[in-house]
Length: 275
Ligand code: FE
Ligand code: FE
Ligand code: ZN
Image (tube, rainbow, N blue to C red; front, top):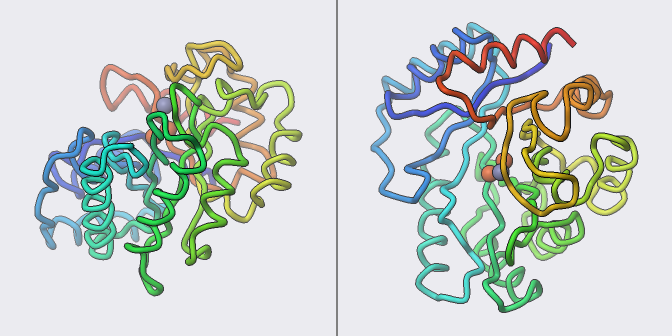
């Protein structure tokens, strides 16, 4: 059974997000841990969380994915930006201990001119300071499209981060199909080759989840603009190969495609399930 769901708002609570997922044939979802721009997180309501947990148990949900705010930049040249990122990262990890969610995805960040090596040092420093050995959460780095000074534009940069982290068993990768395609990995024409390269550079054991997005931008453009499944430069056949690939099909898939409202995800989920 394919594990798939969209990005959902938790503004109305976790239980409500679980109910919304059910309505659109999803068996997981992704959510922002707080306002995507990085505001204060809402207090956790235990009853609400228990309600989601019941839905997940009864309906056989796969793992949920928490996404850190976009403003979190662990490797900025500005110390106050790095400290803000550290605070959010730590607070998110502690809150996740109370939630039925084992995966926490964040963007490695932008080095803002200091160079990749320095940026990776900053990222690893925060991860090593703030992660702890028996934490419940797996921290996953997202593959990025490589715009500006973004770190994580290729598998090598992500591998360099993992290399510097002490708790490697708590680290993973989230592969974003839109980002890697615009980053120059041909998941349309040569999916097997890309996965072989991933395995050689990082190791497929580190691959924990997939962001399933089509792209508005051409191959190798380093531009990050998501498109609905089948309406972009990747195309529907590429997604058929991705969700049925023997090395991918049992991973959780998360849609971050642009939709008018949540119910519109049902079409995409039903299509992907039909494969
Ligand atoms: Fe992301
Ligand atoms: Fe993504
Ligand atoms: Zn994106």
